[in-house]
Length: 49
Image 1 (cartoon, one colour):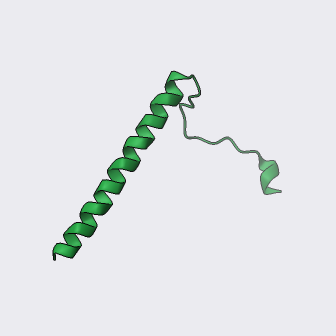
Image 2 (tube, rainbow, N blue to C red):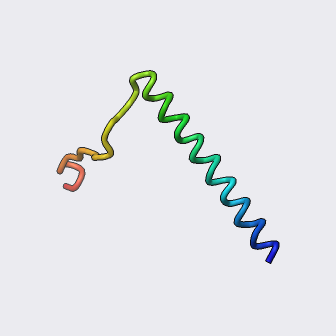
Image 3 (cartoon, helix red, strand yellow):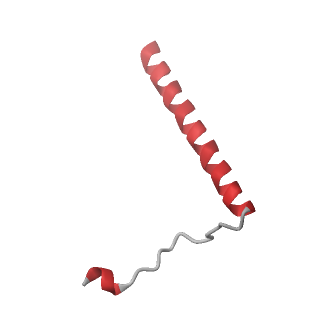
């Protein structure tokens, strides 16, 4: 049981650190005007033949 707790705690720590790095990266992009404010990717039909 304690082993499961440690594994979950380690995963939570890894997830939290990853999210903090993501937020830091997004804030840096926003400050340098390298910011894309949409997740919609415009694709051309040429890619699909």
